[in-house]
Image (cartoon, rainbow, N blue to C red; front, side, top):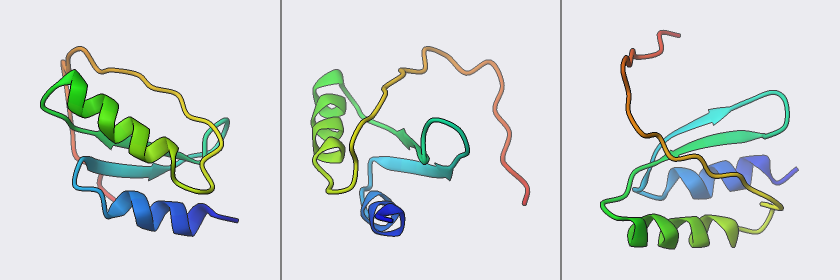
Length: 72
């Protein structure tokens, strides 16, 4: 029920570069950009404190061999 509110909050964070609705275990996947691990930790702390977020999982992308833009 909090999904629209959570999405609106996440969409307002400049560090969130993309937000995806999903099926399966998670409601959203947020792509986050940071200049350092310290900044990354800070944004994760802010995200995890958003009312309606009850759990999260973090994965760091090590490299991107290929990237394409989604075409909807």
